Image 1 (cartoon, rainbow, N blue to C red):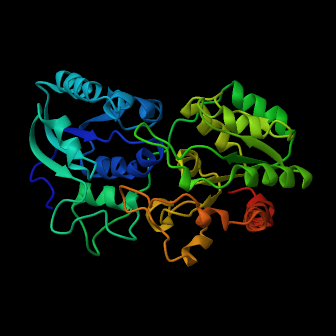
Image 2 (cartoon, rainbow, N blue to C red; image 1 turned 90 degrees about the vertical axis):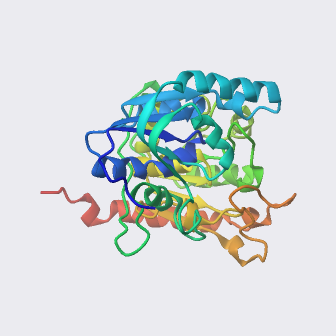
Length: 355
């Protein structure tokens, strides 16, 4: 997979994706800007992640596809959305097109384009993403073509943090206390819901109670479809911001938290973007592939002891009705990791002003 012989002046990224997948793909923007600093960069994305990309510097234009229609069970809706996308892209010319999906069906979206070079995730001499390698690094590999000791790791661009009414409410609620964010929902995109990735909801509720008893503030976050999360926390002292923030506003909330607890989902990845320490709860997916390696992320994955874990192969999960791999994560273990974050936060070196 060689790099283009000439600098690319116009680049298109095709990445529809869910929020977590989009966050993991962001390091390729940094790689692109390092290699093609003056290029005009366009991203074709799903409607659900448009607010995230609008908060990311370095993207010159965003073209939107209705991913709810693209992944609809109604074949006519799927076809109509592909055709609508063709009309949006018709006549466009790019030096480089990056198809950041390994599913060949996304190639359909690029059919009306004219381009000098097309690169696909997992193409080349070695298919991928490679087992055990960070997906973030795999997106960079697609951009650079480097797959040996010359390869470089790139950090994602820093998003624009939006201070909102939710941030102000969090400040008043915290009243000087460290606040821990909990994200019990997520694990869902326009194509499907993946409940196997979720830590049991009652564990999150009991964790909130333990944290409140220890003097921490607790904020619960999620999107507008997750009212069932709010209902579960109704008898706790937690601040409920479920469904009350846009993605940029949620970044602003997470940036003010002392730590975040989340399973493999969009909020987990958003928290890593802000630099907020994360206790990441893994079960059916492999943390080596999905957990950020250059951020303060502490992974809990006791389910790796099971012969069936991980069961996600990049496309499908096992036909499982009992996610024991997630149920093995104990509240005490989460509290222990959070205590480690808090001790580091309060250590003398952490409090000392930087010169």
